[in-house]
Image (cartoon, rainbow, N blue to C red; front, top):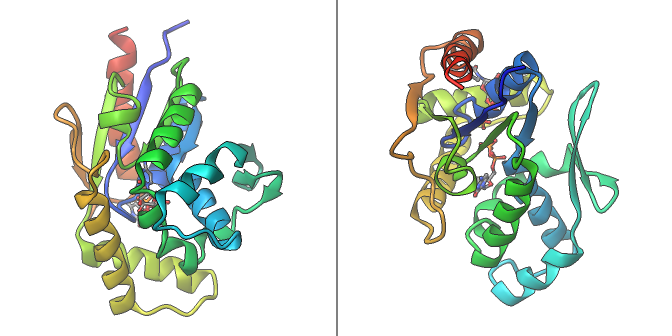
Length: 226
Ligand code: CDP
Ligand code: CDP
């Protein structure tokens, strides 16, 4: 059988990374790794344990005692934190609006990157995040940098909220997304940046299927070349 490649998908919030990464992993029978969920789970734990998220030492102490599992299930990937299902809880606004602070910590990034590299060590993985192509899987055979205008990205999250029966404020969402992008791009350790060898896809005017199709085409080319 053909060698399994690694696929890195990076980009700003709500560009469509996880939706398309999941689809691509399914089509190729690869493992999907949502690295954002790992930072979210740790942030959730820090909040519930009342850790000062600006305190590097306190964050560092939390790491060895924190177990994060990504488990495939019929209803999508489950996020299990220290044995508890936190799949829904980590998507709440309290977590979303603090995760970039936790993710800027050097100790946190070192630990998470090392865990993610272990998950990807045998290839056959589609991983999405902010620093996958630059730090986690610098040798990935296929690197995608996915983006879309901030208006479109806020609109997508807005739509998601509404369809889940939550209230949602477009201008508030836009502000939150811009703020998170800014801290992700400006942090010192592995900031959000396009890898030199990444292929850029602007999804502003593309459907999920169109993006998935484009990525599958690029993946097949790399697999054939093995
Ligand atoms: O899905 P969404 O775009 O809202 O974000 P996510 O992928 O769940 O990631 C949440 C946050 O985790 C990001 O805003 C980053 O601060 C952080 N993150 C990171 O620093 N590095 C990664 N590889 C993935 C996420
Ligand atoms: O993972 P990331 O934060 O980059 O984005 P996502 O959670 O995959 O996508 C955000 C929302 O945009 C989801 O509701 C997708 O269904 C939607 N989407 C879209 O409408 N068109 C695309 N080309 C990609 C995603």
